[in-house]
Image: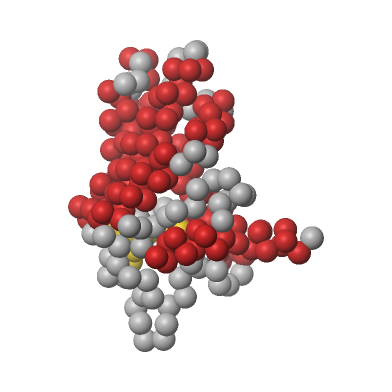
Length: 201
């Protein structure tokens, strides 16, 4: 079972732009004197979040969009690149959301700030690509995202064409995963504000 705070947030705020899954976001408001208001997440729950984030029905058209932008390697056939991009997405999700965090005791969810000015929140959201939370509520270097994406990029050489099995190709895939992850953080941070403004009009 996925922990209640995560599901409560997803149910309250819905999908990002009404489409993209938002399972790994927590809208936390720490109580005075408490290091964190959110209960620690278990390894089993992290694997469930990785599964939901990888195979939610909305993921498939989104991966098709990424494929149209060039994801999935240099193969000219869209179908082959799409299958490769789906594999990239699932492997990266499991590595950074569940597998690496289960080894490092990190909490791979995104904890919204929701406070301060726009530039402060933009910087906070971007920083979560290199800083993350431990299971006890502290902060630490984000091995899960940086190392997990790097491991996924390396594993992808098992199924990419020989032309893409290069150091440059591997690092490009890693950089692209990091870029999408940072963009995702920004959307997760500001989506409730965007949604509230849309509902006012």
